[in-house]
Image (tube, rainbow, N blue to C red):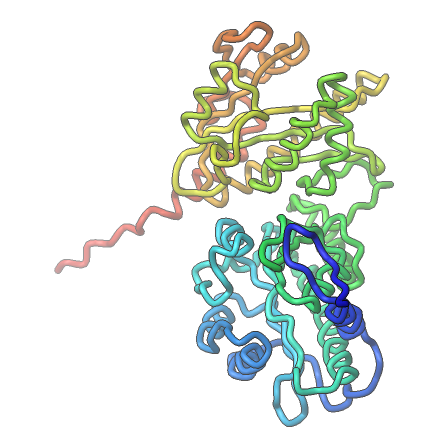
Length: 458
């Protein structure tokens, strides 16, 4: 009788396949010496792409073509890695590709595969600029024996670890990486790396993400050291990615991840008891963050969540419903937009929470620090051409209404008893926290204008 493991609603794996996971774990993190002498790690070159393609075909059956990979490499040469035997044969490979967020979402939803990505989907690394990446083509020679494959991958990972430290020193700011797999071996690799499940498995396809700031996986340790050095050398450039979180240095601001939602739910419970314990709202927080991973931001003090904010772009019809009193957590995923350029966005603030500590001064500091860091996030969006025209919020308490009025929000009325609605016009508001965003957006717009053509007539 065969034994199985897995979720009964989705694909099962035989016990023999589970053993393959154990073998894959060894292969991915092996550190022996056999096989290493005839293979060396290298940054991939255009000439390597034919070998990388052939390796991928042998393993996966279908893959992005060699020419397609060369176009990726031309767009952003960093983050492409191979292990070559002395005879020139490619025996292991990996790429870390920074692509546009909407393409990441399509990739993770299985709407596209890597072979559908073109060079224009890639956003080249730039110092201090946040990047989100996909990990792909983690491959080793299927014709080699298990121990040799393990050592090829060990060579690969040690090389990647060293190069990531170099990228960190260059100021490359990676906030998240994403991956998926349909094989027990690939799933084991993702789990062993500490990656979180991104969505419910479908037909054996499992999706994963890794939050760089909260991960302690060994491959990232050099990267974190390198990026910390870059931050110390560039105090004038405030990256929004807390690659290092030395809590002794004070408060830490970062984009929330799925693993942080339990803490946010607890903070809501402390603020809104007993309403903060509502199971539907608790589930909604996780769902919103899954659909728009850029919508929630946290502030930590020595590892404790002390402030949070949810800023969510909604479709026009949903905005009108919010103005009429509908609660923010009641909107569905189909009514949520993404932070991307192309059309003006209208956003709502759902919750703006701070820890109910005894010291009013501390609570005020937490709230102000969160807003100051959010201002930097808005500036980054401005640099990307993301246009936010207005922000809406509900003041359901005297303190909340006072904060919104002091922030120059315009009162719209009280459509539902106890829910006073407010609007902030981003372009005309005198709020100083918005000035960096407006300047960044104006600079982005100026760069989009076609250069004037001088009169060359004679």
